[in-house]
Image (cartoon, rainbow, N blue to C red; front, side):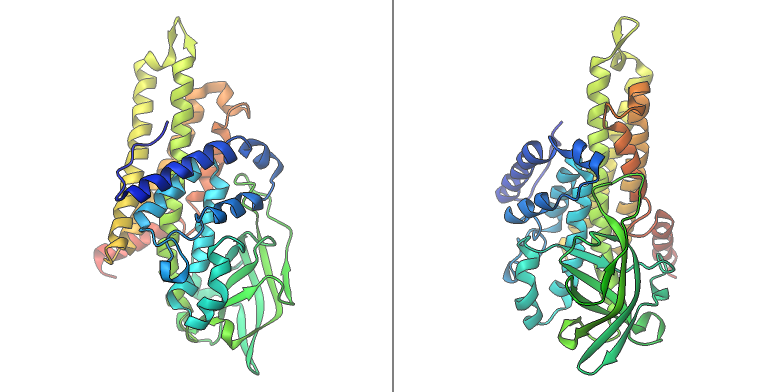
Length: 381
């Protein structure tokens, strides 16, 4: 059922209505078949770009939508309620654009941002490596100065859109100075030396193609370094807080979809001469699911409003990511339980929602890392 939202402007209300219409007409009718075939939804991303939905949080002066995060994240949630893989892709694309928006030069923004923000190009965020996931400082991909540019060598892992993206935001080591030795680069997909491994075989989000990106002597000019040498960690962390909010919103949309399936089924299924929703044990389970979804939405909106106000929100972003993704795992699991035997079959999407929810507790920083971030804010370490 449609979520009742308190939105800040008439423009935002119109935007959400447009997104819901697009989800109903263009995504819900095809999502089951696309996920079954693991078909990358490039056409959907192109349509979202045409509607201006891939540029919402970017400033208007750079060609973006100029929408507050409070609105952008609710768009992500609406998309996730229809097609989780696409919502994750929209969040990833926003993550890849953030370094240029926040740290790029005027020349770089003029050269790259228009195509990045209008949806004609799609990005991938290359931070993680086989031996450097949560420990970003352990990145070993190197960027060696080579004349008027850099030579990039190394392997990035778990990269959404690998092999499908038009550009890659790559973090590589320009010195051995630990976290201060990382730098950020804009690498077009047709750059020689960029190689893509076969996609990972995953338990869910089959339309979100994920794989390794191998950089074998990839040469980029200095003009494609984003920010200063050694500024990569700052750039990565500034984007990750926003990325965690994107995943929190997507997880909330996924949980809402699972709740909707469970409520509809419980209202139609009869046992012992009654609708199963009339049995208190099941009705209370649905109530707990609703409470979890509502709590998840409140936590990410709180963090978003802090961000929009220019206030610190790193702790709150971690809280939102932790609460929303744990809620998604719990609510999708309970949805399968409400549906009983058919919930375990592919006749209903509940089992897919459950499989998709699991990874939300892992990417953009595992929930154990979120607890570490939160606790350090609390005790001042």
